Image (tube, rainbow, N blue to C red; front, side, top):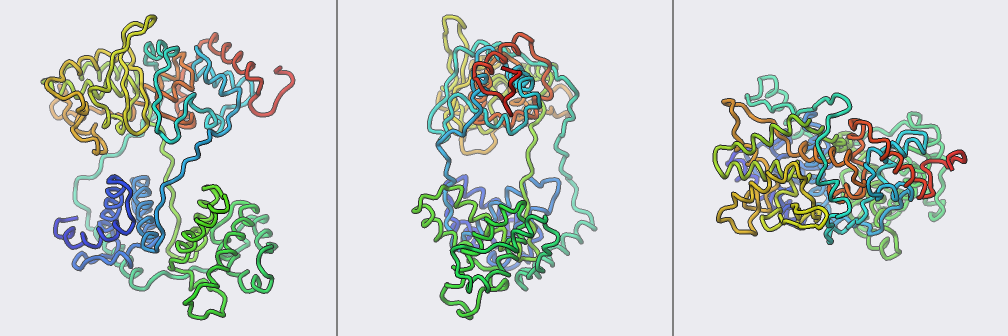
Length: 561
């Protein structure tokens, strides 16, 4: 977007974002970026007059935007989430912070006991669980394993476990058990769009402008024969218990159409959806100011309206007063939105694709990174490179963690059995204190020695803690011997490499989760297939720990006792 276009669009964008009442500066920035990205796409804006976001930005337009580029589908889907917040704020729905359940979800006692047993690596634990359960350990099984100290509200600080600090300090890089296909991000084209691409963008722009002028188009009624037999039977046989049969006769066809359009996956979901939708339609019928108060609501009346947002806003307080959990309120909101949006012929729901964990670097690559970090031409580049490599590879910090770390957060600890070692404290985000591995302790000490006149409260990378990714500047400044050669260092892969080493070291899984800032082991499933075979003695200890838990994974077996 050019400077002239931004001056034209700025008042409309600021007004839309202010209406959404952002809670923080980062929230406001995310909404602004999403709105600008939407206007910069083929959305129907002529780029001459100020854009009318009330006409251009709809739920359907946000979903079309999310599907506009398959290569950047995840980023666009995140933008689309912010765009939907702008649409719903215009409809009068206030944004509320997502509530976090303070209760720790139930986990399998045997798994949790073994996950906290000293001297048992994660790889050995998983292998022992597979032998006990006589089946593979799935992502859902690992998702029930929690860190020993979970701070769901992120108000507390998780400190290092000295009983396992020695194993973490000595954790070394390991080679993979199999080849890894690196899914590198393809370089973005630097050339201008071709004539064919420009014509396609112009056609999409004209189509978006036409949709904005004509309004939403009513979709055809869904064919019940395309649904699963159990779902179709549940839709046709449903009878609400709290609605008068005389009223239900007039609402039934529209309720079935809405729920069928939402494509329920089971008969239970279909009946629950009809319960929610039927109560909503009764509320709509009773609303003042309808064109025909005596007539039942129609699909055309619901299409493109803000009735769902108004209903959810009022129902939220009633449900909470009745003691309903936040999950129930979220279910009501999502079911109604999905059902009413199915009436729009241009609407097609998008989802954020699951992010696969970046593969780890091998030991030879890690040694090269260490050598390069120590060989930079001046003290500033050396300090930044040593902090980046040392804290990501040595402590598993993520780019979001690094922007909060200050000089004073890196401390030296003396333990009678372990001697002197370094820890790094993450003061914001997922607060915790992480042990820095011996293999990269020298890098961090070298960076600290180059602090110079910097204040101890200054961030180790960058100067502002509000910057989203402070690692990019440090990466760009790294100098290599090859002229024009760029070193491929990904901080996410550096963190994954640390996690891979921790999974193969005799460190309890619960401690690994604490040190990594994870609340669940679900995300480490991708790495387990790469881990080499563990020490048989560790597997034996894990088997004993599982037996002490007196619980088996899956169905109990008498021959295993």
